[in-house]
Amino acid sequence: MKRFIGIIIILLFIPILVIVQDAIAVELTTADSFNKQLDTSIELSTPPINVPVSMTDRNGVIFTEEYVEWREPLALTSIPTFVRQLFLESEDTGFFEHRGYDVAAIVRAFAVNTATDDVRQGASTITQQVVRMRFLSTEKTYERKLTELFYAAELEKQTSKDDILEMYLNEMYFGNQVYGIGAAASYYFNKPIYELNKAEQAFIAAIPNNPSLYNPLVHFNQTKKRQERLLSILAKNGVITTAEAETYASIPIELQVKKKENNFPVYSTYVLSELSELIAQSEGLTDQIANATDESTKLALEARVKQRTAEVLATGLIIETALDPIKQRRDEQAISALLKPKGLQAGAAVIDNGTREIVSLFAGKDYKKADFHRAFQAVRQPGSAIKPILVYAPYFESGPYTANSRVNSGNICIGTYCPTNVGGYVYGTTKVRDAFRLSHNTAAIRLFKTVGIDKAFDFIEPFQFKSITQQDHTYAAALGGLSKGMTPLELAGAYTGFIDGTYKRPHAIRSVKDTAGTILYEWPNDKIDVWSPATVSTMRSLLSDVVTSGTGRGIPNTTSYTGAKTGTTDHYKDLWVGGLNEHYTTAVWVGYDKPQPMKRLSDQKLHLQLFSTLLLD
Picture 1 (cartoon, one colour):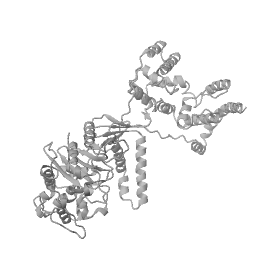
Picture 2 (tube, rainbow, N blue to C red; picture 1 turned 90 degrees about the vertical axis):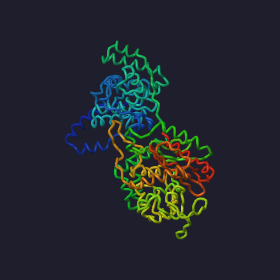
Picture 3 (spheres, rainbow, N blue to C red; picture 1 turned 120 degrees about the vertical axis):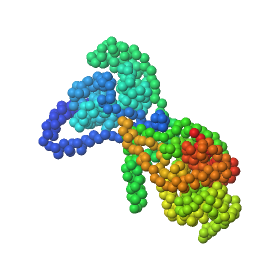
Picture 4 (spheres, rainbow, N blue to C red; picture 1 turned 60 degrees about the vertical axis):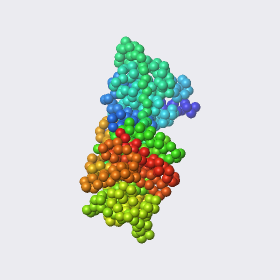
């Protein structure tokens, strides 16, 4: 009885709906306020849809795709007429005439459902299907169906027929997490829709009617039969001839299923992090965060950065990067092979000297996507590897000093701070060159004092170390004694200043484009001067001495120039090397996630081996 009453109500509402809609159409021309009220009551805004993000390497080859649902939205004009006809003729022949619903189809559905005492026959127009996909559930009840009719009528008033058809073709489900005709073409045939022949176009058009039954990866023959039925419908309706339908049906179908690219997660993970920074800087949020006067404002701005990043990612992007896939793969394999002790880890970054682009990263042995990324997330004290940028280069910038200037390497105490040299050795007055080459700690403290703590830190301000604060402005900083430290990527970036005296933020991203190829974001190409030519020349000489006769002995000269500086922390809990050759600048950290002494590994010069590997082409 209840079902019978429901059917009667639906039948009664059909003429009422037609009459009411006509009345409303007339009334709306004189009652604009009512129009606004109706639009508010049924607000058919576009729901959020995530479009895939692709990353390409320096050669333009896609190496990573980020998506849960595979989508490739297309403009209606980009979808072949034959494809449109396949759906219009099989799903809604009166699409361009009806108001969003088809009364005759509803009557037919009513007759079938009455005969079966069930709600099986859909009678849905394309507009109704769009409403269902976008705004409503798919349950088959009379109440939901009635709501669907009103929504369809409203959508037809708010949107053009072409726009509705475009929504439909882009949002239909094609099985296997594939949405839209464009995505179906690239997923099942690995080609754009316009390159498919008519047999292939009809084959994928067969899927949405029942994506489970017509899943071509599971039920290929069923999908083929459905394709043939669609072709026969087009022939019956005069869109194509019977001979053409038979010809298209006879063409063999060979699937070329798309494989999701998920290579180099070490690099792609960093790219997504850098993207957030690029968006923040491009939209002025970075400066706003830096100038925030209170913590709540800062937190709100940081939340805004996350929100904007999510919004941009959801639109679908092509991120062009500087990844060198050959070097990335080789570096990962070589470094992992050298990290033999259980639990031993490393983090590293390699920067191209000419472009200042990040070409390779090492995040840790056995790294998996979303793991702790030791190249840019591992903040560790750098030991003596900080001396070139915080002590020696500022020293040469601060007066008429040279590598042959004299410095006292004897014991020193400044208040209660009394650093010593490695091994407790005491030296007398020596040349600055030798103090650098042999990493005398006491000499470094004296030079740091000569420059002045605050002035020395002013010199490294351009490098934007994220974890260095005012709290670190102490004499211990000259030896790497920081409250937190820095990452391998940050240290490598700072060492690029010794290429030619200029600094430009190292970056992995070359450009961020939308799916149409329009550039949305790029890093600025500006460089700033950080060291004078004289300082650069002297520092490159000192760094070279470390390799030939200092703490970096064992690093091979693979190009015309190689320079480096080593660093260790107390009890050898961190091993560092930073430096450069003619092609690359790099920094590598070696240690355990839970710090422990590594004197034996230091004696074996493991960190020098890793550094040498990273400098290879």
